[in-house]
Length: 297
Ligand SMILES: Cc1cc2nc3c(=O)[nH]c(=O)nc-3n(C[C@H](O)[C@H](O)[C@H](O)COP(=O)(O)OP(=O)(O)OC[C@H]3O[C@@H](n4cnc5c(N)ncnc54)[C@H](O)[C@@H]3O)c2cc1C
Image 1 (cartoon, rainbow, N blue to C red):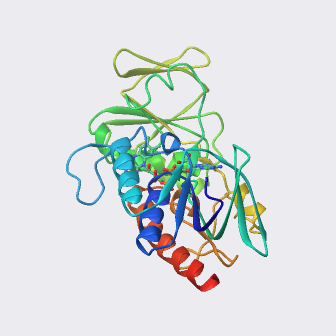
Image 2: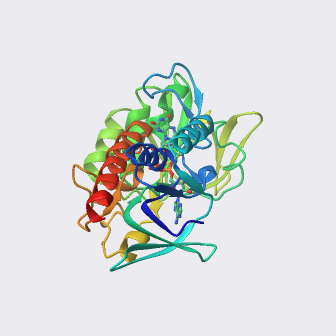
């Protein structure tokens, strides 16, 4: 592993890979550290990204993007980052192998991981009716019955959105804590609220029903788990930056944070959690990080 480079990108999703492409094309020596298979896009099917017709496999986009980055000289390390620090030499990024890389600019592109219910059927039916993103997958449920699971604003907004696509929308909650204004909007749009705790998701090749704790069964074709997300924003704290209360990282129009030389892009900077935004910010962050590294030399 080379130990001194211009730019380190933490995260190997679309935001990080695009940052790597733009940074290395600017002739900055760039390393992406992260596991591609842990990207939110890896198991997703995309149909709302510019230039792509029909459903495209997210893992294919990621693999192609990483090959592109490599063709411009960007290196990839398939490890997690476990710590970071800053000193007079620049930023020090520590990989799980224990090795450290020193760099002049850092791009944090660690995304968010969607919170899980951890119930039987959730993993088995992921992509076969179980989704973590109504905004992404709404179109695949036209005319079908769906259940939205969650207590907070994410669930309320997703439930209302799904009424424009699905024939029936149930909102299953164990105690709604979304603002009353959002709950009213969902109700007015025709969402049927059911109190209960999801126990299992059942089906054959695709989802057929959601089972609740008291053994009630709701016949549905889709279950949207809308519990919000968690991020690796703690890495920013190691570098002197406090994330926002929702764990996102605030950036300016160059995707730079309030710490000079520290950039962020993609889902970690906040909603919408969408590929197009991740890639757009990745390009900005990559260019800005390369530029900043040049001035720091
Ligand atoms: C089921 C599903 C379907 C979706 N469908 C669509 C769609 O149709 N259209 C659309 O526009 N969007 C869709 N999305 C959203 C889209 O996938 C995300 O917006 C996008 O992947 C965000 O990119 P990102 O690079 O910011 O984060 P991610 O893709 O999540 O990548 C984050 C990367 O950071 C890495 N990482 C995290 N912590 C560390 C660490 N400590 N050290 C090193 N690396 C770390 C991860 O391993 C991963 O490589 C979908 C998402 C899901 C979950």
